[in-house]
Image 1: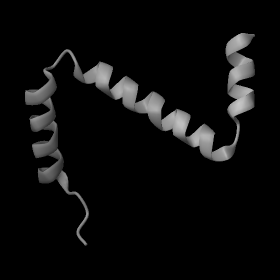
Image 2 (image 1 turned 180 degrees about the horizontal axis):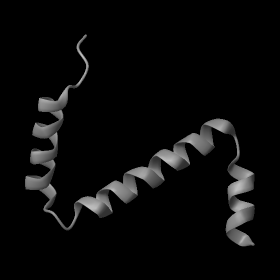
Image 3 (image 1 turned 120 degrees about the vertical axis):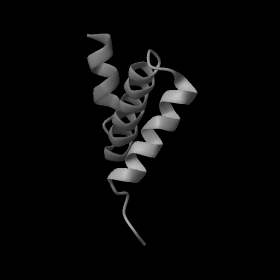
Image 4 (image 1 turned 180 degrees about the vertical axis):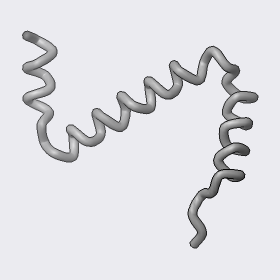
Length: 56
């Protein structure tokens, strides 16, 4: 299987810009980052620690 190269990455970014617009891309990236962070903490089992931090 081939990895994603520079030309493919440019095509993906161009399609994302067309779909979401320039102003929405940072919001989408932020949401994606938060989702990945929550997924990692759920895998580690640190759910209790995350809830404690939010309450403090």
